[in-house]
Image (cartoon, rainbow, N blue to C red; front, side, top):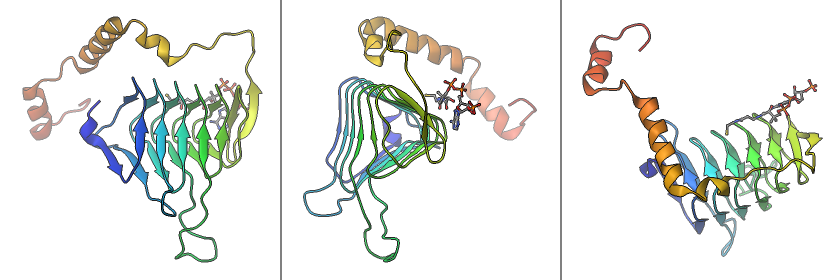
Amino acid sequence: MKPWNVRLFGGPIEMGRYANVIATSDNKVRFSVWPEKKNMGRIKIGDYCLICPGVRIGAANSVVIGDNCMIASNVDITDSDWHDIYNRISPGVSSPVTIEDNVWIGYGAIICKGVSIGANSVIGAGSVVTGSVPPNTVAAGNPARALKTFDPDVKISKRDALFSDHPNFDKKMDMLDREMLQGNTLSGWLRHLFFPKKGD
Ligand SMILES: CC(C)(COP(=O)(O)OP(=O)(O)OC[C@H]1O[C@@H](n2cnc3c(N)ncnc32)[C@H](O)[C@@H]1OP(=O)(O)O)[C@@H](O)C(=O)NCCC(=O)NCCS
């Protein structure tokens, strides 16, 4: 949605089928590949992923995200420190980031270099993930630590199910848009600029 608010820098940057990227003018999505060395650097995002406003992914080496992942607003994922701790003018250390299928990363989390997040796991809002998270685990905090593991008997529904009936999905999204935007008119927008009132 609003693809002109998605900023791409460098490449390769690959995105799978049915991925939803939501970007807004005041909170753009940014994918940057800035290779540490020649033939390094890539971003690969799988099928059915959700990328929310303000997400920033930066790769000097490799950031690979599996299918059905949900990346909430303002999440930052990077595989590099971009500077060395002693030599502040060198490119610093990079190490690949791997996010397996069906991972959900909560609002504002930071995923640092070398991290792997196992399939189905959830990262709490605002977490700083510096070490790897096993599959089927909820982890949170700074630094993120495992809070619990999933009950293997409970089925986890995945985003691909949304697209099994895509005409209906389109209809639902359209209805949601109409509901969110109802009452928005050109004259109302002009009035709020010149005669703002409480509740605008
Ligand atoms: C991680 C999360 C899923 C856990 O939810 P939950 O299973 O209901 O867990 P609880 O709220 O019972 O919390 C369990 C413990 O983890 C702690 N915790 C939960 N979320 C945390 C977070 N983001 N950071 C640090 N600690 C957290 C709680 O304080 C609690 O600690 P305690 O046992 O010492 O009291 C949820 O807190 C979260 O962060 N959701 C992300 C929501 C989001 O970003 N949505 C974006 C829309 S796509």
